[in-house]
Image 1: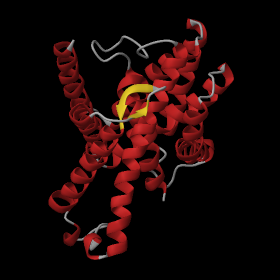
Image 2 (image 1 turned 45 degrees about the horizontal axis):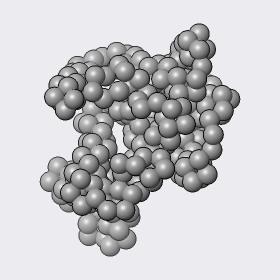
Image 3 (image 1 turned 120 degrees about the horizontal axis):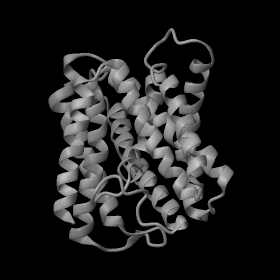
Image 4 (image 1 turned 90 degrees about the vertical axis):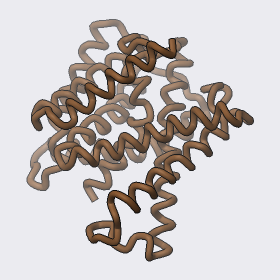
Length: 280
């Protein structure tokens, strides 16, 4: 199983990097819309919909994503696309910060119409943000993805090393508080390391003087911790949906990894906030 996971991960990373740096603007937008389509198909599966309903839902969300994807990065976007894209990004941010923690706490049951509405908010904004940010700077996307990857890897190894109290035993028994703290430490080390060595605030730009101001430094550290928490919330939310649906994985498209949703669960909760930052 581990060998299969590693091989699949290598192919996924290679494919992602090729698409990120070599696809045209339109090609990358279509790629992100396709991810949204597959994720929406799996989302419908968790809701127990039939194939016809799942297909219609997936195509609809893919179309909305494709229409909205280029809007975030353009100040001259107009009409319903302009309003829809920005509305969905703001709703997604509120959904993950306000609604999902209560959902996890109360363990609300899946209902078809709720799944349909939350799918639009949970899947379209991350995909459209992913498309828009790459069209601004591919390296920005790679840096953002790395935050989630670092959180996942650090959580895995720290959880295995230290074990301890379970984070959410009734939702995802494998996750521990040690893993969560390890993820936060890993993300903070990565974020600060990137800021000091690659982005170099002292060289000018938006981050100039970041570490010379206590308040700005504190806000930056809290932002890294918040992103870590959001990535964990996204993971737990999908775990809850799978548990309520009675399945281990969201799909079987990726050998050793399950479905697309299993790979992007943490990104669904973190990417909308980068989209919101882009709007601001």
